[in-house]
Amino acid sequence: FDKDIPLFNIPNRIVHVEDNFDKIKDYKFVMIEGGEGMLKAVQSFVDYYLIFRSPHFKNGISPKLDLKLKELFTMSIGEDRLSWFKKDNG
Image: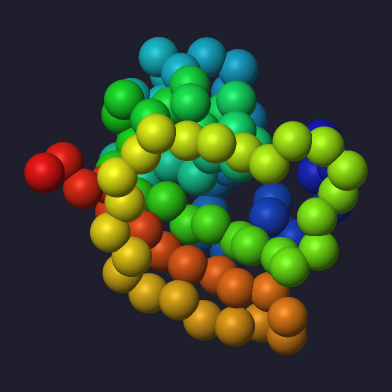
């Protein structure tokens, strides 16, 4: 990781880069970045999702997830959309 990017340079923020999901259970707020595989791997213990959607797709297969989500907030950023969702447990 490039430790010079803004993520690592915010005052009063401690950033840990982990490779084990067991370690993140010790934290109250965790940000996990990834695609379809990562979403599937964490869906049993993640409650909120911040999803950035673009109308421009790269070549490949679109993600397919079997999640029930309730949209909490959406905003446009240029052509893109940023949305917060909460897992809907029924």
